[in-house]
Length: 281
Ligand code: ADP
Ligand code: MG
Image (cartoon, rainbow, N blue to C red; front, side, top):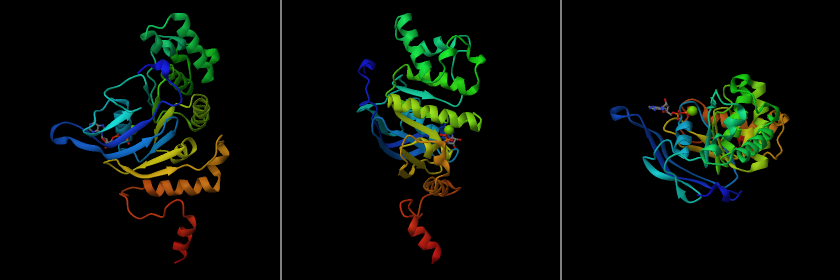
């Protein structure tokens, strides 16, 4: 795979009948079972589910950190075997080098690939501008706020021009205001780059605000309970969160996620009138 050929047509993720097992010996168990999903290039997909349902396990398998016990994962038709920069992963905690300046942290992936200093610095500065940190290139990570550190982390991953950006609760440690700001920034970045994004969260608001599509996962072993096409137009603004249709869909997602729910009859989201009729019965 040649990163120079990267374009918006790359980033097609296929997960086929995937099982992922965790633990060793007698305590080994299946954390993700028979999970299949097809994610077209450029789509923004959120994986939503209660804590412990297997979201990180699924993302770890797509990243290539966890092997498939059954089934397979393909990126642009090629089977995933192990981690690669084309599948960039962002966690809740950043992985920046504390002793390197921001610009050198962002440029690090290019340094590893042997890109010349001037070229990698230029690309790093461009990405820092994209994430709103133009004036902070020469700071050290410890001199930045948590939200700014996560912006550097995103730039650090994006410099590898990943075909798919994998994000595991990346804003989970931030305060509510910073988190909302980061969500808006991520949408701006995605609008600019159109990289496929697979974003894991247990926060319904976050999933519905960000995603083109939300995959709701069941309790362990994780499988997909519902594949929701999010109908809200873009660009999305904070006012969307109090919109009637948003709140209605949010309630539906919460029902899906409620404790102990293992699938079975629920009013489908697309038929709010039907649920009103059911209440009247
Ligand atoms: P989520 O990200 O949805 O909160 P995870 O994918 O981290 O869930 O974990 C799924 C389940 O597997 C949880 O019950 C968790 O406790 C368990 N688990 C996670 N990692 C390991 C591991 N390395 N060994 C054993 N069990 C694990
Ligand atoms: Mg997790």
